[in-house]
Length: 71
Image (cartoon, rainbow, N blue to C red; front, side, top):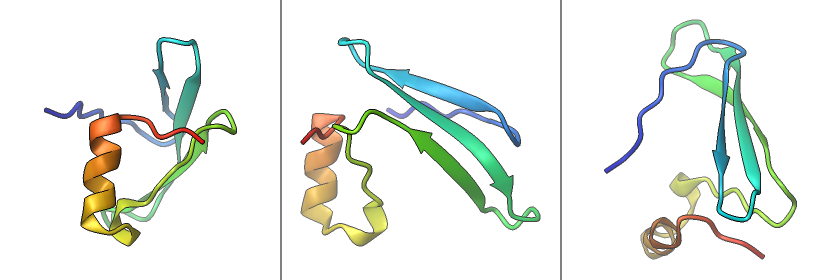
């Protein structure tokens, strides 16, 4: 199951873990209604952000199972 959130330009949402670490995601640009947006991601340095389209399928599966990958 996935959480689906609708946000408009300059709106944000925050993801927090049990240790109090926060990841803030903000919509910073809507690309002229071409089904594309730009996001700003603010997170502690120990968090790694992966783009799933460039990872091998097995890595995406592993990351999904771990929820958050840390260094």
